[in-house]
Length: 171
Image 1: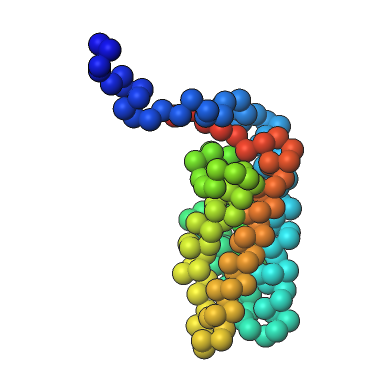
Image 2 (image 1 turned 60 degrees about the horizontal axis):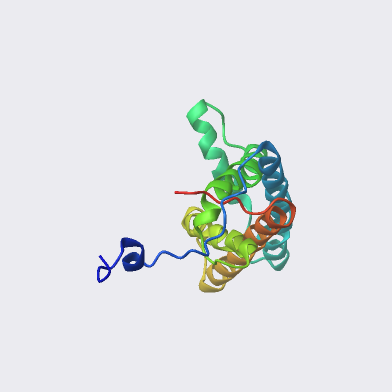
């Protein structure tokens, strides 16, 4: 037995893993929703305000968010689109981040995981709201929408990191 390699040695288990001591509680969920609200508010000037002021692209496609309401027989409107956009950024995405954030890079600092998370969702946002316009409009759409999503993700990650810590899960 002295010449045999033990299983722990062969798979390279790291004994310095951090403890899984941040459970998802009501307080953590509330903080995540607060971070999502703050992120949604902070991303709007970048996603909507600057491009609208520069005349690069219009924000009327926000009614596409209301398309989800057609499943329930509701007519898509701008107000409903804004509500669903805010609901997604304040409730749906923060709850998703609480579950997935523990598994995202980078290892440190943890709040940067919010930017990684937001980048994944940006890849779905882009084709859903792709502008039917020239190269300048498309390029500005890509830049401003990515920056806005990074602001959202960094805000979400920072609020959770500073107040409660990004929850860790043992798998």
